[in-house]
Length: 314
Image (cartoon, rainbow, N blue to C red; front, side, top):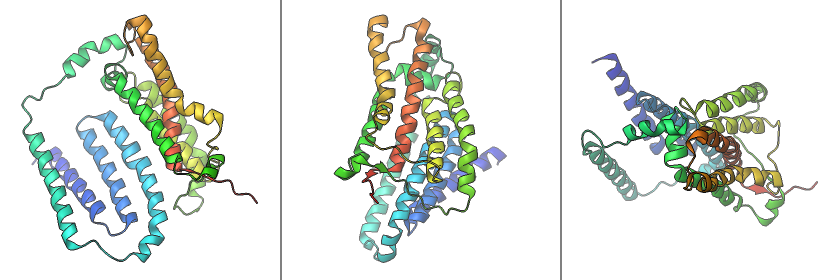
């Protein structure tokens, strides 16, 4: 067995172990730790498959921000779990296990039954990529060849924030989210919150700008910016803005609004919605990605912060 094959088998076993742990763990905190570990291992898997863009997103969203949300939820549920000692009936657990096994077998059969070679539009994408002015095929697909899907994804992201805010009581709309975290204040968090954000800001902007030619893009850069802001908030060095702030609401829709405006502009100058004239394609895509990165970073951080709470008067 070659070293590379041994390494891939080992990673595969670790992925299955982390997945099983996150499902079988008795308490939510242990399950969350298993889930975060699973996400980091999946990042390695995507790197082995040379899907660097997917690996970056998995590490940032699948393991990072999602893990932070689940850790906060686990902290809120800790007192409840201490009182609940009952387990689901054995029959229900068997049915759930069989259902999961059935889904796994169906996915395996589907993947193994794919024709060889697998149908792909990769060749046509690479051939058409120079018209976009981009060197990164993934970014070209997202921003040009399936731009309408990308626009709708950002709209859904904003709507998800509205959904979270709608969980607040009526008086909460005059307040702000209060970010809670289960970490002890031992000085390390404050130190990191003072030293990492400047580097994170540069790295996030670099990911967005570099995404035009290499792995990266607005989404990956935005997750880094969101993580840096959340770090500052969790360290108590700043406050989440009030949800009624006009600048906050404008910033939350700036990305999709710019994307839509450029798409409508394409009807006049290129003859189709979300079409870019070839000489200006790269400039227009970057014009969309800058506000979109800021919107994504803002919305992701606010989703983690949760619904607003009423203002506490002294």
